[in-house]
Image: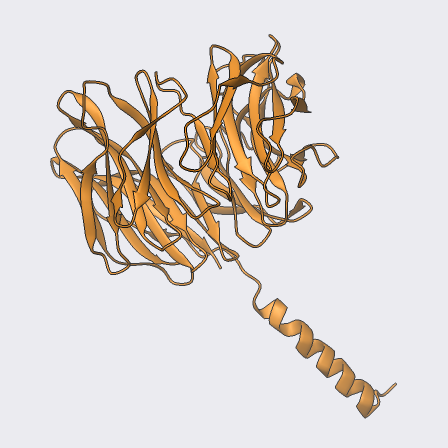
Length: 426
């Protein structure tokens, strides 16, 4: 049967309406080299809503360790030479990068100096001009641990780290860092979880001798009293996320002696504290390494490893799974979703929102001789994209790739054969 001209025109118009979405379907680029000389390790990535991309790492070149960073765009990838922020023959590690709301790139790292591990910071302009390094822990003999950059919903950017007996934070102010202030959590290598909501309230959560503790401070104010959350087992590994609706979600592992459950609690928008704790997955999940991503679609995605061991501490390889929390921060219903393929064993997951309602999850296959970096895109409603293997072969460790996302795009980075590799989802 022949189509009428009118039907043919309508069909053509419909096809034309569908084609742009199909033509713009995104995918991961082939892996690219971010470094090519020396031995690089510990990459960190950041992306922002303007489509900017930054990547930092440590690189051993000759007798020196160097803290380096490169910039680019999510559309085109990295470009230009690396900025060398610090160089020393002694120990240096833990580079972390982050974009502020004003577009300034902030960088932090750890360096052995005056018999202690110190935190240093710097900022880098789009054109590559560097300010710093700034000494963020230049006093005393206490070493510092686990530097991170936390972007607040109020547009702030702050560095956070732990010391032997305290934890501290410093705001990124223009092209510099403000003076460090104490956070209400102990040191001893404990990494406190920190979020800042839209009105500038800072919420901190940490585990102390099996208790899950929280405190919060209004913008520019002091922290209020420390409050213990639900006593549902020995607590470890706290994580915080801020939902699109403004609720703060806390997730942690808790063990009553037969493996880890995942427990959650919610601080509703504008409230002074968290409500009662609730189970997300039971102890039969033997959950480790929870990581959170709050999407602009209102969901909070909780990625974790489900292992076969009842040991509640440390890490153990297993399947990467995901639980969903709704806009109110409570379980959205349905069983956990399996992210990793059958047979793959991972040590820990990574997860990052893409800024347009979806997220990326990643992991590394921990099986000897089968190391591979894999990622998966997750659309709203836990609609899973295909598993993509971004790299294999001589992967440096079983650590997951570092992930960042913004403007509907994403980036993953990892180390292979002593060089930082990366792939862009665009």
